[in-house]
Length: 253
Image 1 (cartoon, rainbow, N blue to C red):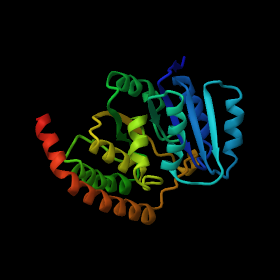
Image 2: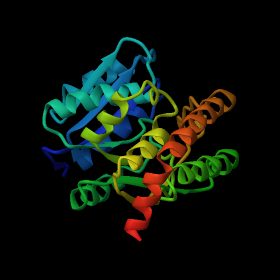
Image 3: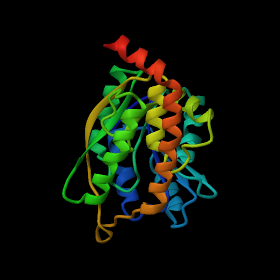
């Protein structure tokens, strides 16, 4: 039976996710309530499928954006609505079945135990993970840890995590970035700069092949260029904040 909550919700941004969408949403509904899905300009008919599912499940709400704005923009759209309704935390996860629905409840419990913190998924990869992407994320993780003076980010790219809503809205309102593939990394770095504590929990991650219904929108050169530009910005932001971050690090011991 799903665990109901008035403070914590599951938030799933979705863009042309393929056939694993409905099984993923159904599985999330079995774990938690409410579940919100933001359809980010999808053109694959998934909006209609989700709306039909929502008609059967009171715990499911669906927002349909008319055109694709990017993951971060879709998340921000839902965050404003969540904040207006009194929700304090949102667990984000992918719509393609990559993230572990069985970890929703443990992650939410960790957030309830430490409400000031962000609960970050530390991915546990199996043989399905592309070696190039597993190795490549180590570079982004190194930069994210440098930019936060090793505040404790186990993984900067995993999108399975619980955010405190108000601080994340404040971070995103303050600058125009974080709207596309750069969202996950920049969110965790900027929240760390604001002093939001970090809790890391393991999260098994599975990559599905096209034959298994897997869909990837990752573009190696485009998205790595976006990450490079993002880390360029964050590094100079880090330099400006480094005395404060160093003092905070010394205070914490």
